[in-house]
Length: 170
Image (tube, rainbow, N blue to C red; front, top):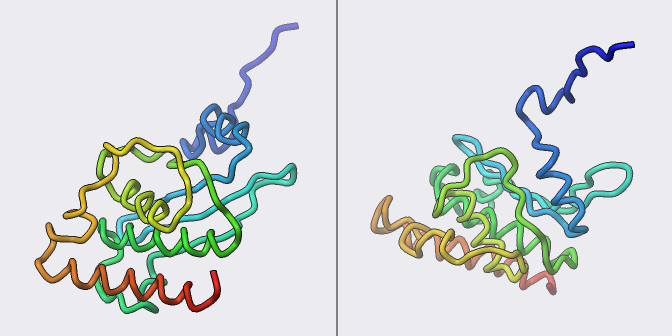
């Protein structure tokens, strides 16, 4: 008897999941640092896989930055850095010390928003294997390419975020 056509997994057909890449990440046994971007926002999550599926331990969404005084656009490099910093500090408070970066099917662009979020996670004290050359420059992280006063605002918000977590005994 001849086998017919085998339908691929739904998420594979919809080009939402690369199962080979996912399997490699899961076999590492480490917590995944999942960075997802949209046109207007960034999301950074720390996800642990168990036999029952993925469990989100902590997450940060760029809209949360408003609580710390960020009143600028949430889809740029400085906002991505601050979102990564916020997620990293939440993860550190939850006892996470290391992870592995998961960018999914997004295009990897040297110095882009994904790696700005990674830089924020690294600055929070979480160890994630990476190459220094993919991280954005300090000028881009602090928004000097956007406006001259952006650097002051980014540093101010970063200090507020750190202060909020230092006050919680982390």
